[in-house]
Image (cartoon, rainbow, N blue to C red):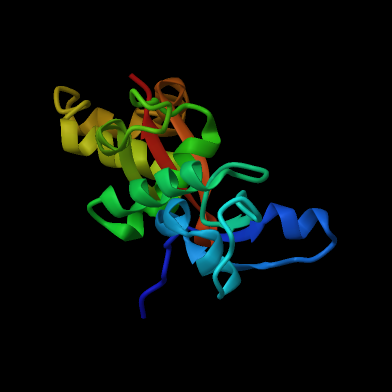
Length: 178
C-alpha cells in the first residue's frame, strides 16, 4: 500500500473571498503558481478582475498559515526533487525542527537534508547502538568489558550532535547536526 505525500493547497480567489464567497479548489502545490483565475473559476475571467489567487489552506507543507501560490509551488517542487517521495514526511519534520539549512532561494536544501538524514528509528538509543556497531566505536574494548559500557549514557552524550523529531508509529527521525 502506498501513501501519497504530495503537498496540496486549497487555492482560492481573493476577490471572491472579499465579497463573501469561497471560490477555489485543491491543487498539487507544484501547480499552484501556474493556475490562472479563469482556470480556478472554470470560466473566462477578465484579466483586471479576480486577478489575485491565494493558498488559504494546505496539506503536506511544513509551515503554518496561508501561502502565496509561488511559495506553494516551490514546496511542491521540493517534494518532486526528493529522490524518494516516502522521505517527504522526514523532510517536513526536519523543517519543523528548525534545524534545517536553506538554499539560495530561502527554501530548505534537499542536498543538506540527504546528507543529514540518519533514518527513522524506534528510539535515539537504537540509532546510537547501530552507529556504535557500524563505526566500531567500541571495537578496541575487550569483549569481556563491553557489557560494562553504558550505551544509554553514551547515547545521551552524543545526542547533542543530532536533532530528533517524532515520526509515525512512536518512532523518531534522526538528523545529524554539522
